[in-house]
Image 1 (cartoon, rainbow, N blue to C red):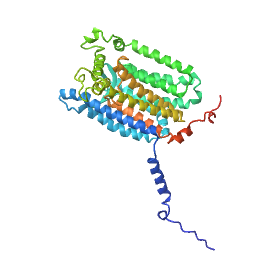
Image 2 (image 1 turned 90 degrees about the horizontal axis):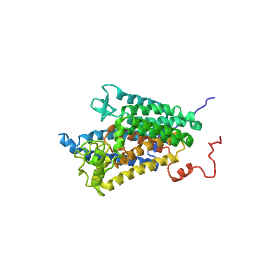
Image 3 (image 1 turned 45 degrees about the vertical axis):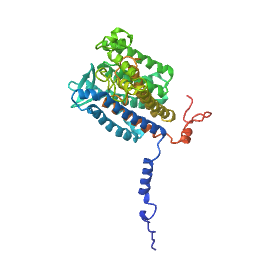
Image 4 (image 1 turned 90 degrees about the vertical axis):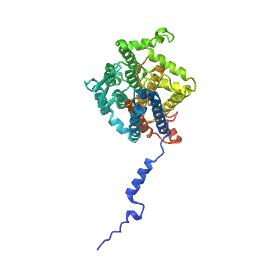
Length: 424
């Protein structure tokens, strides 16, 4: 007795086969709608980067031409990092959350080793007394900028793994405080400016806060950070001089008569903002950029912005940073993953906190701390690290439910306890 098997139908004659179906599914996922948080973060990052390139060009073209260089010399270098960083941001946005968890430890180790290169003779470069740069060939980089993102990822992973143990101070402190202290110490030792170290301390505190540690445990690291800041300030004469200059009366003749001094740049920064008024002098018409404001393209670029575009231009930049912060806080609010919440909290404390510090320095609310304005100040390493950090946020935003109905479904019912939590 013989049996016959029915002939199989070719894949091309039917529904396209499993491979064709898989291809259509993959294509559908690639073009699936993204949450509004993704669009807000991506758009504000691109707008601020474009705004920054425009202001770097305006702030540097006069000095470049005076030195016999092309007026586009500085902005082209900055644009190269933008051209590299923007694609990296969108590539990072496609990576899953599991990837960021896996590279948390390796990224911190790599960034710490990179930071230690500033102490290697022949590689480390000092700028204005700060041994915080390295130079390889014609390229100069600031390794501490990459430490900010690496520290946020590492803290997110460690605190995520210890979620059920955060009620104990020993599990909160180890290894967070020793490792965090080592990272911050490496930056503070080689830097005359206290700003970068303070931003790293703020990232550590921000991650602890968003991890949900109890207030009584959170206060102890806060006290340690305050004591460390005071220690680093009083043990360095240059840092103390900058702090004391911020306390000098603005109308004091010591400030007006200083041809060069600790409050010289602060005074000219205020004058730039005052010259701008409400609507500004017009793009490219700054007066302070003609040699009066030394850090016009990096730490004091907000002063040039205010002089040329006035209060209106400053308000637009502040609005963009506000939208960026709101979108990130929406990620923190909606996510169910503690790792996403902690890392997002650390990144928003870093970027928005650093922006507020930079603007506060220009407004003379803080002493000169030497931190750039994210997205806008001249500095390729700073721009690259901030754009990659935005890519991490975009990756997190993709994990959120799309649409208002799904978002509301993700919120726990007010009268019902979450099923995965137990009373301990």
